[in-house]
Image (cartoon, rainbow, N blue to C red; front, side, top):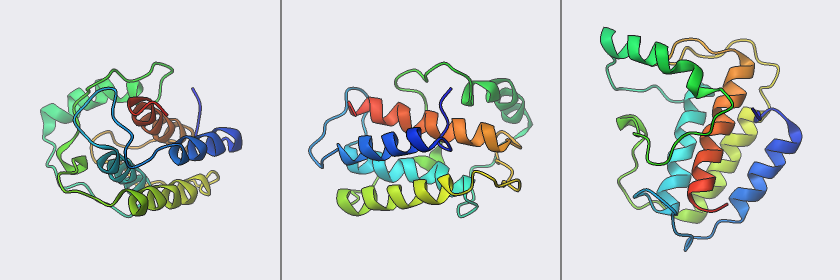
Length: 150
């Protein structure tokens, strides 16, 4: 599995983001491209310790998430139309260029933390290693970039 901490992968993700325009249409799903680039910022903000999720996760959900956790960073791509957590849904109409630039800034900040040993605990899945965070963030970005043909 690729990782966002690999320089070549990082540069390729930024290139793919730059290939998007405000008129890029999704291959699947209901988000438009501006909503997608805004949505993609949120998991990075969680990893960077700048966003806390508000959805209350009970014991049963935590058990389910524990079983699902390896899927977050394994070698298999995520399926189309997987469920988006409430905290990551974008319902407004963001400005594409601004949100695209913000996404690139958050990716760059995350990429700079390759040697970080103190990651925040994920509210749904618990602790992840640096390697796992790099794979998760890449996998999420790749999922949505594929969604928009980038």
